[in-house]
Image (tube, rainbow, N blue to C red; front, top):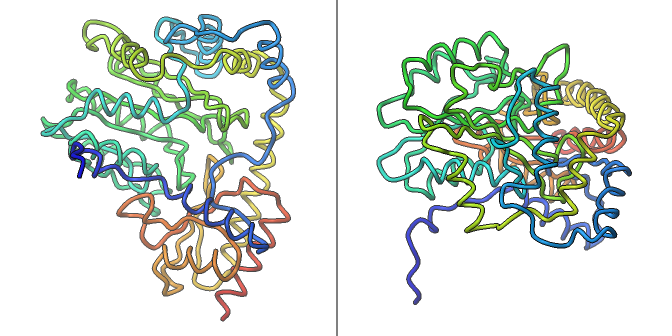
Length: 394
């Protein structure tokens, strides 16, 4: 038997892809499946973005690009950051990467090792914990509680920091809950972090444009006191419906105090993915600099669907749903149904033809909840609610 390093035995998965595979297989057998499991917009990438990639190919942009990304793409991200946050960042601090996961992979790899502790949201994106465990670091869950509107608590988060803490991962608007942490709570957290200068922060802001009910996104970039130890994760996947393009960006500090984090991840890029493909970067520039009408239209559609989902779920026996304030997920409480969450999700797929994700796939505190993505049509959402109701009535 071949011997591999023990770290690979600790790698987990993102079960949404397993559910997608199962749903696809059932559909291939002729079963009518409504997929509310996978977290990707059901909208097509806007036409002008696709055309920019085609033009880049026709113009001969077929070769390598810098490991950090095309300067024009990094400049576009810097412009967009200034527009959305009011913060001026240098293109020399921007990394263009092949998807959002790459940023969390790099950040956790840089700070994680045996003896270190990394704080991450629970329930949260499953790759956080998976990568922490891979590095040998100890994962410390930061509870994300329904009674707190699925926002993190600054006091509770700060209370988990120890001298061993290397990295704190934050996510707002959040996957899987749709929770948005208010600015006042973020301010408390930043103030408290002054007492812990040894802790780096990675802020996952991939859903930054998807805020509802008057909520405004509060980027961690707006706090200069932590910018020298802040990594911001963002990208094109959600905002411009470009999940399959594998296009992300991140903003890294590069001062002596930060340990030249940007240069570290640049070296990682050289050794790992070389660069992001050139045509997609031209598409990314067009996405940022072009018309945003499709983005506005998509977010409005998500908002309308959100209301339908919340009303529908709260009408079902044994289910209650806190209104999500961001992203395109609902995280209903299913404890009163009497079903363990993952078993319920499996049964709904196999017997009712509705694909959902069980809450435990997002962390220890996910038991009793399921994740529903409303990145699907209003018609399909209503059909899914009807099927769930019939299933529960049995």
